[in-house]
Length: 84
Image (tube, rainbow, N blue to C red; front, side):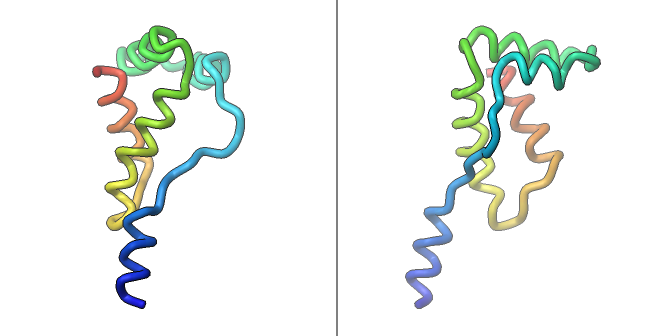
């Protein structure tokens, strides 16, 4: 049982439900005039959509499953993604 639990835990993955698009991101960031928000939007437009962002975000947040994922973790990863 211990090995099965370890295997399942190590193979968990994040997925995002709901429909999110560049337009939806723009809507969320509309009133956010920070450099970070502009940089993220620019990166998403450059990548021609949010698919790469969501895949990257889910992949890096997987490492936080053991300790828990919080809003700051997501914020930090969005910042890292937009700078890459």
